[in-house]
Figure 1 (cartoon, rainbow, N blue to C red):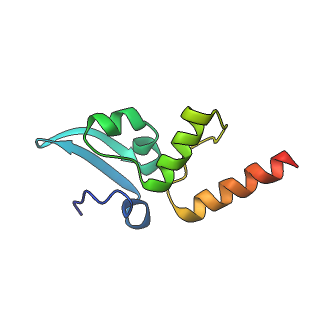
Figure 2 (figure 1 turned 90 degrees about the vertical axis):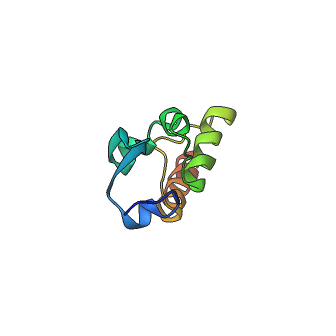
Figure 3 (figure 1 turned 60 degrees about the vertical axis):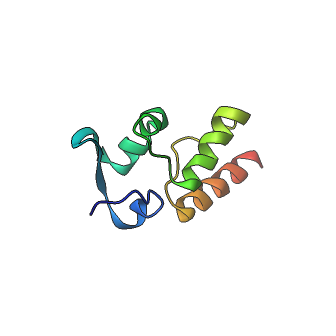
Length: 87
């Protein structure tokens, strides 16, 4: 499947290739590829929106978010873990 809809990828794929002008820039699991937000940006793409939120919390606000969640369900689970840790 080829798409620019990065928000759909975590729901439909387990691995991906980032292409530029027919050349593979990066390939691997979703966690590997989206785990490098700078590389994603250089490729002219963006993180899934929920991942971008956690990336911003980490880089702009200093919140220790750990690995970026890729889906709403994973983000909810991560938030619950973070809230429990604060109690």
